[in-house]
Image 1: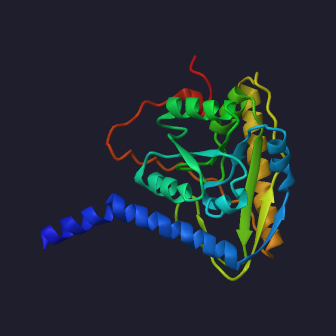
Image 2: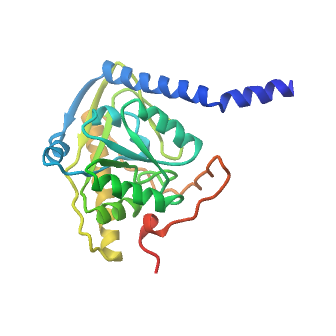
Image 3: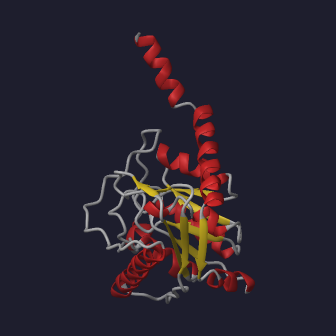
Amino acid sequence: MNLLRRKLRKFIRSDRLRRLLCYAIHLYIRFVYATNRWSVEGADHPRRLRDAGRPFILAFWHGRLMMIPMAWQRLAPIHMLISAHRDGRIIADAVAHFGVQTVTGSTRHGGTAALRAMVKSLAAGDCVGITPDGPAGPAMVASNGIINVARLARVPIVPVTFATTRRRMMRSWDRMEIALPFGRGAFIWGEPIALGDRLDENGVERARREVERRMLDMVVEAEARVGREWTPPPPRAPVPEPEPESGQRPARTPELAGGEKR
């Protein structure tokens, strides 16, 4: 019996099962997109930037991640910041089926390498996707990380969100929205948020609050488009980020977590 349990745990953690699961997730997202009636607002904002050859940071809440690949529609090469934890690898493998490349790291761990990779991608003309409240919350509270990437790369932030009439909300820290088929959905794109590259500490905080406010307002608007009244969630304490599978804890990097070390 113990041998059977060990084999079962090994199978569940296997790369083969993870790849199969990720392929199924990607098929489900396409199925939901195909079976809902979608409205799109503000899609000209990212298109104008791309037509001008300008890269930008795509910002979306962690709990509203599911349908973002369908809003993006391979508009441009994009690199998404993903946690090194096993759940992050599942997300990375799933979005890879939509042509999304990933950068491993977070605003807490592995930040130096992730920061350099994102700035390099933006300098090359590609876009970068970041969840400002990921990977461990609090939900819908933006961190300074996205502001620091934007000011170092000197690119704007373009927020996006979605809502659907039929959904399930998971009991996770981010209240993940699982869209269901056979309903209506709405994508909302926000206007680009431009930042100065010489922000002091107060300026970074003001920019962080502005990004957070606009993204919350967009969720309210998207929910209203599908006939639902929504209010922002109450503040929550952050959840400790799980350690990477290797068991080694990468060094914390203040540059991505909220400013330069002094």
